[in-house]
Length: 559
Image (cartoon, rainbow, N blue to C red):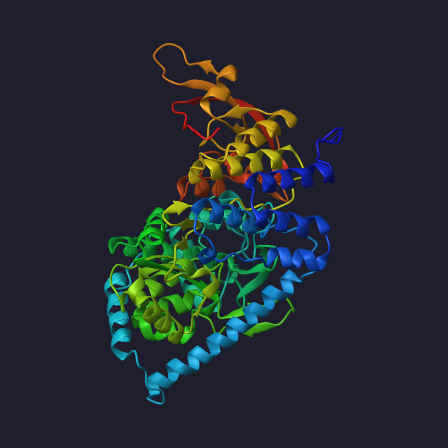
């Protein structure tokens, strides 16, 4: 029986078989439960499947917990399961609840200011204010640009998400951010030329900008139970927000909060699961519950004025209604991540020292866990009790899960396997799972991965060089390798790399012959190395077999 159709796609039976074989290899009663629920295919059973939980206290051995946890989480984020759940509706409802929570928090903080509300955390609030002021310092006269992000804006979407094309998009901006946007274009005459379609540097007048009311809400896939709500910002606002976010990130790093490195939190989570002296805290809808009054009361006034000018005060919701925001900023705003990290660090460190923060992933000493949680809740945040751990043998932070000091980060299947690319990705996820968790005793996985490689032939190579090939151990790859010659140390192997088709010079009206945009993209912040590579979207790439020199080969002794 063929496992793939003529067009290279997997049959539904082959896709289910991959899932079954992985669950069988876990060899856990929970894996059997997951397979029975998945195979039934009914909406009620699938809803039960994605809502399964596992209690770390029910297990004594690392291996038993790891297997049950891996089985429970494997299918929890598959976005194409037919659960019958209105995921967008669930996400929008959660966003509305977050707004109501922010409204309540705003009233509380206004009451504190007027004296109507008495706070049990007066001294802690003052410590948080002082810590934030010390970290931020005064607002600088000039900010270094953070460049464009990869996301969409109100005037760039679809194939127009590259830096090259964004410089030529419509200049959307909110009224409060207009003066900052005019300053940006005054200092960047080539950008003005790109936006207005001119051939030489120009001065941009106020009339060239399009005033917009705010950002736009959008639901994107998250897991099998709900979508994720984000808001894409006006074109010029996001540029300005990213500049501020980059500055705050740099200031935080001076005080030991490195938002460019998740490993700090991951290592502390592993240590906490082993010794129990560190607790991990996760917040529900963290960015959507940063209320306006909280920011206004905790940040220096000059910073509040700047951030308030650059944020979107109104949001266009999916029902077509513009609503004034009770929150300060949303996910999609260019400084939200840095701002929330700053707030959570200041709030947590106002209660205890030895705090580490990465976004809403907070780690504090276990002895202060309850007090930090209460202070966070007073500040308007909702602690996610199902993902926060102050005791017991389990901790999780920044995508890393640990049980008794051992890694147990599971494989998450994001979509049901449909083609060879999906098979290779699943294979490599399982390979990394076994390699990182050190499952020397789980020999069945070695046989399973070999079987998948035999049924679905493809290139092989080492871990750490992308997913254009199967990740294998040294011994398995030797027959297909070629030793580097002369003084070069290493081995050559083949992999598939995504490359862009050249010869196309027009995408939705934007051309690569726009010299001003090319100047901005190649010399501005986050400058692009290849203009072609920065202008193509997924419709214009293909996969090409290339040779790569591996100077090292990470081993996996469990095979």
